[in-house]
Image (cartoon, rainbow, N blue to C red):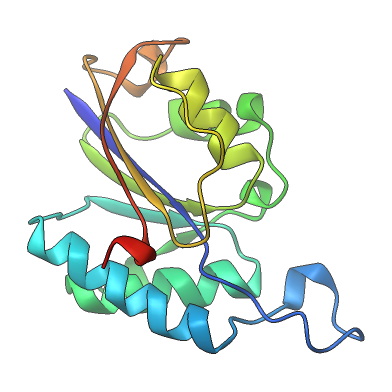
Length: 163
């Protein structure tokens, strides 16, 4: 059995039009929500074997805040530039390339790709993973390469406004 947590980055700041999309930081709400959701994951006893994140600034800030709450060492976070603007196919390629010794993976990324990937993995569709929303999906597989459409089961979808 494999488990994946799909985590959309927290709310970002649009206040500086001179910044590229890739370099936008979190806004105040995002800086509040990311640790809050990390605390929620901790209360659910989440212990990822790997935290994998887009290297965009808002994703980096999100994964750093969540990992701190989970006690996951920052130096072990893996950053993957291809997660930024990734399609379902690209996200599937990233996940199927993971080491099979890893059973629980948290992936921090962006919409619309993250929502599309969640809907690819499960038949329990989500319209839109909101900022800092987290979808837990269990996969009845032994190897990441066994991922196919509809193989997952959504266990929960949580987001900041629930708390």
